[in-house]
Amino acid sequence: MSLERVRKEVVELGRLGRREPVAVHRAEGLDPSKGIFRLEGTRQMTDAREFVLGLMRKAGLEIRFDRVGNMFGRRQGRVSARAVMSGSHLDSVANGGQFDGVVGVVGGLEAVRRLAEEGYPHERPIEIAVFFGEEGSAFGRGAIGSAVLAGMLSQADALNLTDENGTSLRETLRWSGHVGDLEMQLADDVACFVELHVEQGSRLYNTRTRIGVVDRVIGSSWLSIVITGQQNHAGTTPMSERTDALVSAADLILQVKRYAETMARQYDGSAVATVGRLKAFPNAPNVLSETVELGVDVREMVDERMEILMNQILDAVSGLGGRYQVSTEAVVRHKFGVADLSPTVVGTIERCACRLRLTTSRIHSHAGHDAMNLARIVPAGMIFIPSQQGISHSPMEWSDWSDIEAGIRVLTETLKDLSRLE
Ligand SMILES: [Zn+2]
Image 1 (spheres, rainbow, N blue to C red):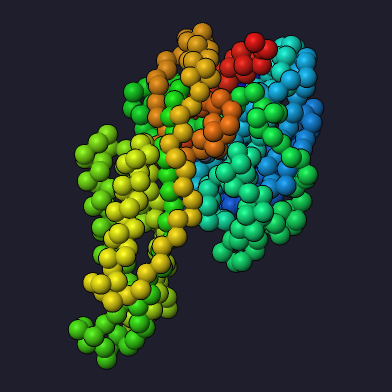
Image 2: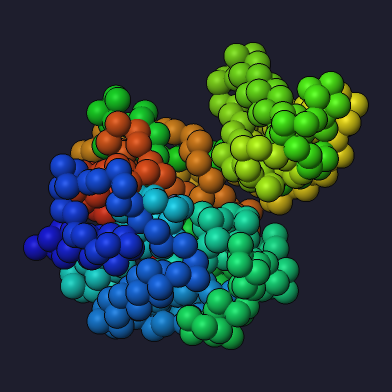
């Protein structure tokens, strides 16, 4: 049974992705302290790529790598034409979940295998893509591989990105060996793109809807902020004579929260801003902090509102100087505008899901995805399946096997439709 095959592969990728390899077949088997650590550059990632490459080879796909670690498996069509592309990513956040990204990679591969087994005569080639560094957990910015493909980030800038240990993306690829010289030109080589993914929110789950048809992906930005104060003795420095970087960081964190809350209240509730990373130096209880680094993630469903929110946060950063006598520096690490997905692809997905008698709902994605980058060059769409309780980016992330099967069936039908030459 082909769902059994998918289940085995997703579970195996989960096993390979944990620091202590455990195979989790049921939600009851999840452990909040044993998530997926499949960051780019880790052994877990190399294992995952090797595993997926093996599956691609077994499926008879033609495998190619580009210069920034994107991996492609192609099944030729009856005619030589621009391909229909599907796929997602294999990397995870630290202590992440078993389904994020993986469902789109294994699901895309499974769709192609089903077409082959059925002997379906698709006209366009079908290309399964595994995009490099979608989560941004290793190299400080998200959706790296798809950003290069879409021409939003140069190959050189991507290769020069470094991880926390100072290892460059270039060195990481050299070490892992998953690199080649393919120069894919999206506009010339790809007709359209469709990505299967878990929703990572609770809307489908709460409304018992089987398939989410995504028509828009939220805009997102990352800010790196450094606040510099004066390191001093926690006992001998009177409260009135302190330049404590950590205290001003605490103030900033609350301001970020307030600005996002106000904007969310004022509009559709999509505005969110998160300080998810804080690094104090020297980070000792008896020492006033010299520097604090903060990582801020800002998202909005409308570009103009995102701009306002970003400016409010940047103003708050510069305002710290006057109030706390600290110096500040803010760098925008990445900025992805709102991406509207293609009405044609969206409509095709919807039709296919209806044909399969699955309940659907038009939905905005509140998480960023590779599809948002590809959508800037080629018509793109996304198929969401429910995430149990809406939990994601967590070891407790779960999607039902029956929902994964439903997603794959919709994807398979969608690929059939999209692979027809107009
Ligand atoms: Zn993802």
